[in-house]
Image (tube, rainbow, N blue to C red; front, side, top):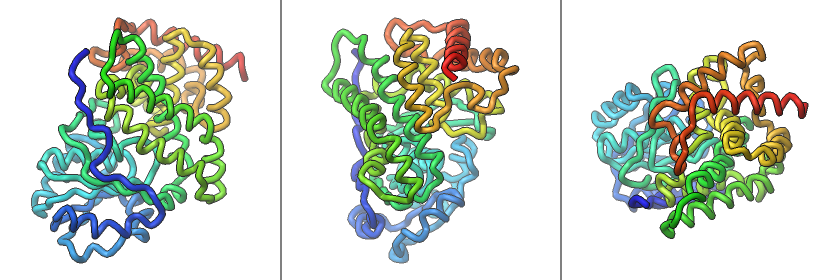
Length: 365
């Protein structure tokens, strides 16, 4: 087995009501003086009322363009350098946080993150997923150090659009199915990889047990134990799988299907985790795990996750052509669908898996 680099968690992580009041104290403990706050417009509107006074710091604010692209990373890095920042403070959803981490790496300074959505594990993973300016997946970059500080105010997440919690459940559920595909065939494993496997399994167990209740509680505006467990599973446990397992705990087939879907214009309005959730089903079909697919269908229906291409906005008449596009990009050289040991997945394999999944879905509706 190749060497494993462990970056299990951020340097400091807290999730509790009112935690942002601790931000000035924690920044002073880190001896930061010039803070560059990077956020999306809606993200800042969601978080602003919870933010403490940062007047003790020389603070600049910047709004990101909407994509984690090389263009945007370079733009924000230049602005942060002009400010002579010694800390990037990212506030927002996954793409904002990925831009913040990439900027910190680009200009070699620490990063603090405040997630406003529980839709991905971006707050706790030392990597950024990069897209074109038009939103098509390019690659992901793993950074040499963990994020310095992550503070989670659950009230912000409770008030977020519920679609993002659903998407986070889909994205985090993939941690188990992808880690299982990457790890179970290994002849031996490091302790950290074994831990990644166990955390990935706990992700599935928590989400299946508490996911539907968490969605219901958010709909009622109730900050419940189930909601907190699911939020932390999405944000922290999901990030720990890759942080502990490195390449054996990150991505496999489900994310490759997501990447293929980013090249289909009809899916651009759907969230990352929604497309990954569909990718889980395709990956399971490729593995021959039909009973597991059937078992997930009822869970997906409860949560509101996509079961078919049609539920991702693709008309039935277009399924064949779209399946070809997805398969082409999902099976490109270097894609994670090829990462599991002895895996050689062809474009034809993916097309047939999509057809099989679509046919099964029709029989069950």
